[in-house]
Amino acid sequence: MADDSLLQRQEEEWQVLQAVYMDDVVDLRKKVAWKVERPLHICLILKQQQSESVAGTTDSDSMIHMVIKCPNKYPDLVPEISLENAKGLSNEQIAVLNTELIERAKSMVGEVMVLELAQHRQLLEDEIQKRQHALKEETKKIKETKQISDEKPTEPEKAVPATPITEVPTCSPIGTPSTPRRPRMYVSCVML
View (cartoon, rainbow, N blue to C red):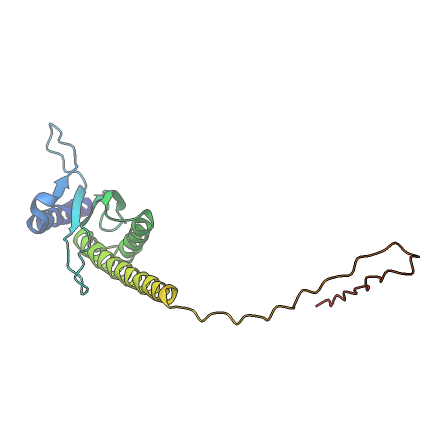
């Protein structure tokens, strides 16, 4: 009897998802000849529409398929969640989204959660997009600062006066008294 009420809750959730997502929700349950109720197994096509940022640049569209496969005891058990066919999201972002969704699902055991997970994913993606935009802006500022500093004329380095080159007397073999000898040069090394 409890299974019937769980399946009924799943069916009601399916109807709500159809009303909200219309063509962007797909029923993945296989049709069988017998009218047997099966647990919810769906694919939500979640899209983030192109939005114009403050700076006037346009962030690219992103899309991902969130596949939810519910066990018979859903919502009393956590559904399997997978993110597939991502567009406009890095692997790192997908991993963060997946982890967040699984944690969120675990915290909602006992409640129908697919709609809230889809909305939570949207909030997470919005936050990631904001962080990406802020990072792009910071990178742009750093490049501009570097470019400005590269363009500034630098002060000419102070020239060190050159020592005049003097002629060195020719060296004579040792023991020749008439020719001057070249003075010895000592080099001292200081170790740091």
